[in-house]
Length: 178
Image (cartoon, rainbow, N blue to C red; front, side, top):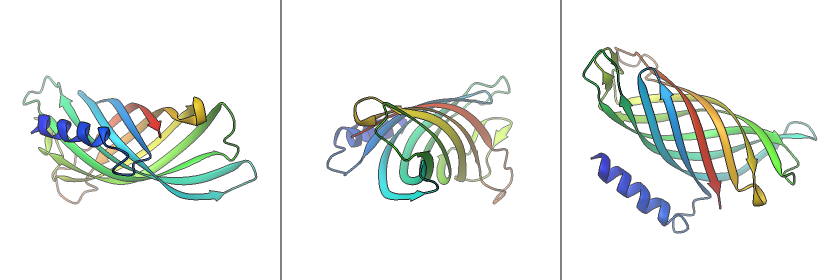
């Protein structure tokens, strides 16, 4: 199953122009006795709002797929497949002609996971999950095509169904914009 998901994502990423994708991402994360690896596709919404003369908020859409691998001594460690979709709001300077542009971002998205536990004492109650994040980073490179950031992500089902142990990830993310 995981091999098919990864194969599909690689095929998708190789044909990004066909799908009108504006960028791709690769993320590595660490959670409570859990490692996370994911890939994503980015679409710029072209929506931007000026807050001041020097700052703006923009929104982009992010679709991700990844795996979480449990390694708890509690036992019954699993590999969880995660597929998510998130509108991300980014606060950044208005002047994007600099060589380095810092940003802050925040979002709440949806995730589907399977199975619904990562190890014996961390269960999620349902496949449907919410994922909220806060992050910081910097865009750089030719035409600001590269993006390196840190995110803190909390995934849980919002008490829709018990148990709702949820999980937090500290994540490093690299993205490339076309």
